[in-house]
Image 1: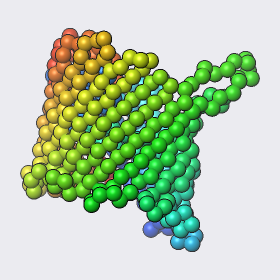
Image 2: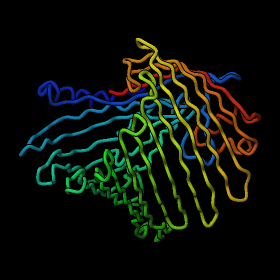
Image 3: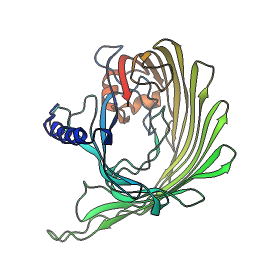
Image 4: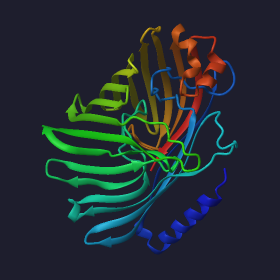
Length: 396
């Protein structure tokens, strides 16, 4: 990996930290690992074509490195003004980037924000490139809401009934005469039940275009979109936390409706559990398909740094006028972690993952978005497969 640019950025921020040692925070996330498949060769990962997510324990064939530096650069009337920089690396196994096999670094987040501005209801004003509106389910790494990109907005403004956030988001990688914008609005922290909160997410989107003055052509028309999500959270249910979500997402003649239920908590004093169920109905130009996902994970502390994990999940996709596809994945893992809690990190996991699928799935196995060609390359003639590997994961 080439670290020249990253090293210069780190050196600059380190110099800033030297003069203001207490004003720079270093955080981040990483995961990486290696493995083999039971037939020989490297680890392959399993996902059902037509399902947007995968059951992730022992089923992540990628590298992610996201070191994040947040520097407090000013303070005014009680508000803290900060700069956040996150150089990041992501690559799935077997992929090349920009014609090279080297891992390449890009800046996933670079933005300025003022925090706890009293005139904004103790909210935040920000502008730049950032992760935004990330509402994640965890064990299948799904983002129920996600508006990452370049933009600006105000966030978590106390409006009495809850906290209001509004942003304008675009992609900086599109053509100057053809782009899309999103205007995500959310209202969260609405106290509606004992130990419960309600949240609303509304995101309209549309095309921004003009004639290309080089050749006089108009960009192909894109439909406007609207996504509406409603999420109810509860604490103290079955010894843990509950999320119930409903979302409607429509762009032109493409519609996606979903229902999500997630439950997590302590099964015993030493065992944490996480359950997830989802049902989706997709329609594209009048052709419907459904996707059902049900799964769960247990994480048991054995003593000292040692723990054992198990995850079982199944996905069923029913395309209209086509055979039903199904895949079930089971992972057993032993782990060494820096703490007794299930969220303790860093952690090192030794895992065995086994997946089974039906003939309808085998016929389209290469369409799997999780390294589909690699999965088909090894198990394209089969209806089951196994991977064994070691993974490291940390956040700080």
